[in-house]
Image (cartoon, rainbow over all chains, first blue to last red; front, side, top):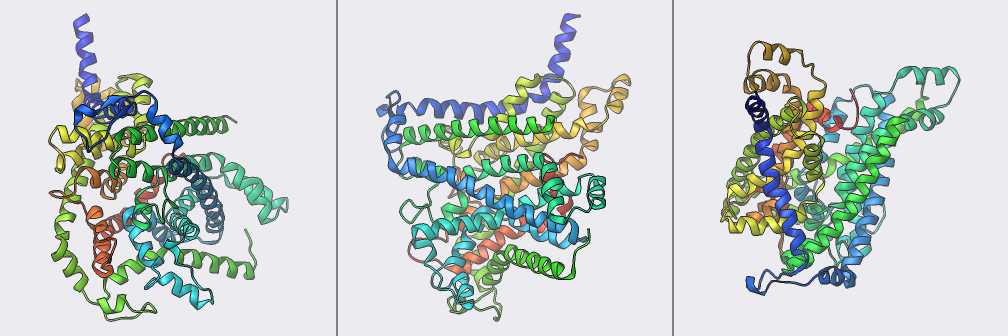
Length: 294
Length: 273
């Protein structure tokens, strides 16, 4: 009887075995490996026997680096800014689409394209468009009488260039999620408001947006954790430059690990990044659950 | 809701502007891929020109771009198949057969939250030791692992909506778990599997970080091959645009064909029902 029970459990357990093996071997083990490395002086270019434990020295060292602190602040700032901008534009467009345009077919197809576009290609495409010599953006600005800047060579404009590129690629994602949320809302509330003579703006602020809270929460969670890891597009567009003006955390870690070969420091940086993300995600998930209960 | 004529005009213009903004970069890279060398370097940029396919010939001949497409296809299609198979097996095990419980679920889902960059440094060292660097295996293993948690997560929430009666009847009829999984669970989950596969495919096909570190000479994926056109001194915009188009177009066409499922997948976690 007992052996039967064990046999039955093993029969069921087999189903999760491949996943457990893969995730343990290629996520959990690398994670532990990185954690151990973050306490080592580990330079890829030097022979293995030069690797030694140095305690928290990597962590102390990276917080002394101006570039790391700046990348950290820049990444957090970019995340907040991009999420707010994309959410605001997303709400406006989604509200308009939800009641003025019945046939969403073509509009939806257009909105899916940037979302599906390969991030590296997005970076290269915008690089071509921002180009000071042949770029189409400054040409179009010229048409309406604006002298375009040398986008990618100036620190401030380069950061704005990154922002525009990300808003371009990910606002459609917000629109699609929010639109699905709005279309799923109960119609009777709207009819009641209409009978009461509420105007469009009041209906949106008093009914549509409050009812969208959970959907917005999920969208913010997804977008924020994506922007926080932003790499491919920036790496193509500016390589983090000019100087370090557009370096995000991932770019900084990539540089430290694969240009300077400081594996120890890079690992320490990625753990700081992981801790910040964990705090944010736990906070966000709690917040969303709270909204669900009320 | 009633809207006045003037408002409708303003709103329409706003939407058209937004859609133009969204479509323009994609139009631009594709149209530039058909420009001759002279037309690309021309200022002001040309909107009307005589199309040529020289850039494609150049990109294919000079950087073996068709091999890059092949490598991308092999790596992403194999990973999607493996991730969807293993992932739905695990989802069935966790959701239906009550294996592992919440502890296992948290373990799997939290692996999804990790930034790739944290794993890429150790994976590089691990795959070097396994002598798998610059092979399909390193990519397929990494992609499959990374996609797994997403597939498991989505498939568990999909299975929750599916009634259990058929499975229970099958158990009474004497079917074993594997028969139930292949004959009942997989066919029932088809809509969910399609949505999940689309996202997994996009994730693998569009990847740059894994591919740029774990491969790069014997195996070279399309995004990495496209990125190589970018050099410090001189950028061959035409062939680069052709490479970009060839990398992006399969994904875009694929998405337009399956757009209903794609939207379902996008909103699966956020919107109920």
